[in-house]
Each structure stands twice: as structure tokens, then as C-alpha cells.
Length: 445
Ligand code: G6P
Ligand code: MN
Image 1: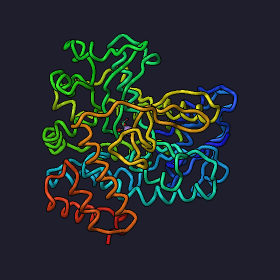
Image 2 (image 1 turned 180 degrees about the vertical axis):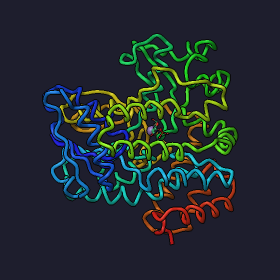
Image 3 (image 1 turned 45 degrees about the vertical axis):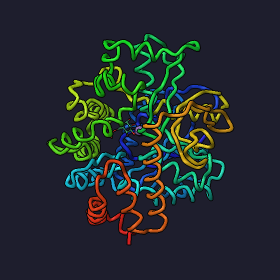
Image 4 (image 1 turned 180 degrees about the horizontal axis):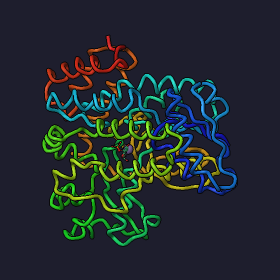
């Protein structure tokens, strides 16, 4: 079975390859094709993978190419994990927004819109090529902003593109852990958009254990989200929000902390990764070891500013290994081998969340088998959550429209309608600032 990874020179590719190495079952991936626009990054990651594979019998063969069409032809699965504009672009997304006093996070608020505007045209081009060159392939989209990008691709690939994120799984795992339940045995009632969802229940053997957690302040304060949001706010909500909702519920503090930070997250990762790729170019340097140390530092500093404003302290040891590769592998196995499973994924809504139309990509538990991912029916969201979900989906739709038409006015509308952008004038200046910073936004006439 052939798996093509777009963004194959990306830093997190070894996580995926590590998961593949652990898969010994019949029908596993035998050939990995790495595609990237940057040959140097491909060489660097190929070195890490070669060290990972050393001593593993029947390790999946790895080839690398900068030719997209060649990479796609004959693929059974395509993992799309690209970063248009690189980490330098992410740093610009943050800087331009923070200068206007609004959030510049990779996926949330103005930063997410800017990133979406330059990623969607590239993702659409990929989707069209997949439809032409590998019409039977399944595309698993890792590329952020994952919900928006999956929706853009679904217009060309239908339900053959499925978006993934590790944050709902991580959240479910943490809640199960504090409740003393085994994550595998828990049913996590989670729904929303990517990076904008809530856990409303966690059922073990048919019984909802979440009320027990919400009723116990010491239990509630004993894990990441409890410390980040504060127990009182979680009890007011009556649910546990995805960590990315910290940017909404504590927006002022988050913006302030990011403005005060020595370097933004994007700038930190830009510099950290530049050191990594330069280091690995020296063949005398053990690549896997350097990769692993770099990864550990990245994990430990994840959302550090948010945790600092909340006084949440360091991340827990158990939370430091993502799980994002496990979601991808579980999804691929379920589809390729018809191993029925349930996963929280980004798929088209159909009729799951009634205020949204059928084509809107949402993040929801899905039954997965050889016929794809099917959202399960869920209870309606409360009004405050519907309000946010609908507002952000409306913004995503403006981003998709702007990417298609190239209309600057539509791009302004996308920024202006976002709940975290507080003036139409700010939105206008953001479009000016972003088009000046990003060559990838030159299409906005
Ligand atoms: C979480 C999110 C991902 C994001 C990752 C890394 O896992 O769900 O969407 O890519 O964090 O964030 P970072 O700030 O390290 O790039
Ligand atoms: Mn994510």
C-alpha cells in the first residue's frame, strides 16, 4: 500500500513514520512517498526516517520527490500536511495581528484567517490533482486551519477527504484519566468545529461521568483544561472546552501575553526549526537524536503563554506526546482494512448540527469503516456554542469565497465578521498588512 505525504519534509513526519513502523498487520503501508517543495527539507527528514528504520525488518520503503503529480500517482492514501509560507509566514500572521491588538494565532482569529487565505488556493490545487491522478485515494488532511482546509478540499473530493486533529483525543484522554476511566472504553461526546469544540459528556458503560468531574473542584482543577480555564468557568459552562477556546474566553489576556512575549510561537518555531534543519544537514550529526530533542522542546513550550496567564504551570508528562499520528494511523487502518472504529474527525455535517448546512465541515465523533467516516448524531449545542460555531463558520465561508474570487472586499468581510476582530477598520488594516507581508496573498486584488 502506498502512502504519499505532502509536506514530506515537515518536522512532524517522523511521528507518522514511527507509527507506521509499529504497524505489523496485514495490508500495512509498504511504500511512503515524501513530497515537498523544498529538496533540502526532504533530505533532512529522510535522514531521520532512515535512522528510525535502522534495525526494523520490513520497514516501509521511503522515496522522496519534489514532483507533486509523480507523488500522487498510484497513491492509496495521501496525508496532506503542508505549511504554505512556512514558519516565517506564521510569524507574520502573528505579528501583523498583534500590531493591531488582535490575536494572531495559527488557527484562531485574524492569524487563522490569514493562514487560511493563503493555504486554501494551494489545498484546492492539490485536491484537483488528486481527483485527476489518484481518484480512488483517501486524503487525510492535517493542514491547518484543518476544518477550513478540509472543507475547501471536500468541494473537489467529497467525503474522500477527512480532516484530523489530535486536540479532541488529547482532551478526551485527559478527562478519562482524571475520572479513572480507560480512554478506550470511554465515549467522548465532543462536537463543534476544529479547535472550537466542547466535551459535553463522557460515558463509561452507558453512564455519563462528566457531572462527577464538574461537581468536584479538586478533580476538575487537576488537569490541563481545569487549570487553563479555571474550575469556576468550567462549572458555569457545564462542559469542557477544547484548549483553543482559551483564545476566545480569555482573549484579552491571551493577546496581551502574546504581545509581551519575547518571541511569538511562530517566531520561536521558525528559529528552532531553522537550527534543526541546519543541524541535520551535517551528516556527522545524529539526525534522530536532534529531531527528538527539538520535538521535546516544542511539546514542552506548546501554549506556554496561555498557561502562564492562567497560572497553569507546566504541561504534564503524559500530555507531551501528541497522538496525532495515532489518529491518522487508526483512521487509515479503519478505512483500508474495514476495521470499524469511532474517531473524532473533521467531516461534512450532513444533518448533524442543525444550524449548519450539509456541506459545512464540522468536528464530531464518526463511525469509520471501509466506506469512510460517518458522523454520529449528537445532542444540539447550547446557544452560546451555536453562536460561536455559526459565526466562525460564516467567516470560513468568506475565506473560501475570497480564495475563489480573489476579492479583497470579501477578505475584509472575513476578518471583520470574526468575533475576535473588533472593528471593520481593523479588518481593513489587517488585509493591507497581510497582503504586504505575504507574497502568497498577491491574488487578493
Ligand atoms: C495541537 C493542534 C495542532 C497543532 C499542534 C502544534 O496538536 O491540535 O493543530 O498543529 O498543536 O502546535 P505548535 O504550536 O507546536 O505548532
Ligand atoms: Mn489541531
